[in-house]
Amino acid sequence: MQKFIIAVILVFGLLSTTSARTDSTLLRSNSPDRHVVVPGDTLWGIASKFLNDPWRWPEVWGLNREQVKNPHKIYPGDIVIVERSLQGVRLRLAEDSNEIRTIKLSPKIRIEQTATAAIPSIPAATIEPFLSQPLVIEKDGLTNAPYILGSGDNRVVLSTGNTAYVSGLPKDKGNAWQLFRSGKAFKDPDQKGLILGYEAIYLGNARAEAFADVSTVTITLAKEEILKGDRLVPAPDIIFNNYAPHAPDFSINGRIISVYGGVTEIGRNAIVTLNKGKLDGLEMGHVLAIYRRSQAKSLQGEMVQLPDERTGLAFVFRVFDKLSYALVVQSTHSIRILDAVKTP
Image (tube, rainbow, N blue to C red; front, side, top):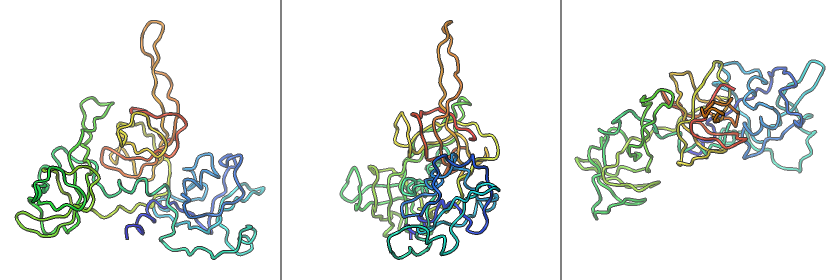
């Protein structure tokens, strides 16, 4: 079931019968005439083959705002075609057998178009762990959550397969639980002292075996060391999100304030935290340009802010009130914490 869900999240839409004429300047100079979709493709990758600005694919295909939120799907075996005429340029799917036969392929069975074969917008495996974890909590948000008392053999560190005992585990929240520990505060670099939320460090998963004043659980997955006092949170359903990548239709000016894994220089496929969220208008599927913020010392010894230099693109896939998580989908230079993110 989880594989099915991951396969259809973040799916980027294509229309097989209605597509928009577009300025040929949107197309890359080396754009192919067509592309046969294969397993392993992502829609961001396919868009990058055709367009200078991959996030403008919904515009090229004529998707309105509601269709961006609930698009159709594209499957392995589909063929994307570029049409050039006096009226302009458009992209569409091959619609009939004559068009499909123009592709020279070795004989094979066409891949069945099922939901499990739908192409995701961006690499699903990269962001899967972030789709079902709370990640951001309020201050003391885990204080009243059930917690690990210990194990029968007095283990200091619990790992996969170990049995543990838990205090305060409710019976009405199901058997699937996740383990967390409170982490660092996320501070807004532009508003000194303002805390946007607190990181919840994901430790692993547990399954409830018996409920009582002291309940019994089995650690089914340990991503980090699990210790006495670590907290349990009911495992949520994986979030569905089939938004097509699109630029915000308003101005956003935020910053990268953290990177998953604690590295100092950030590249493609890194997970970053932004200091903007729902309250700022961000939503899943938004694409933001990343800009390097640099300074130089003047001859008088003063630090001067240099013009921002664009260094990449980030795809927003998880949004909280004041914070968002994004995947770096493109980087031309190294990216650093406190670099700017803006509407492209």
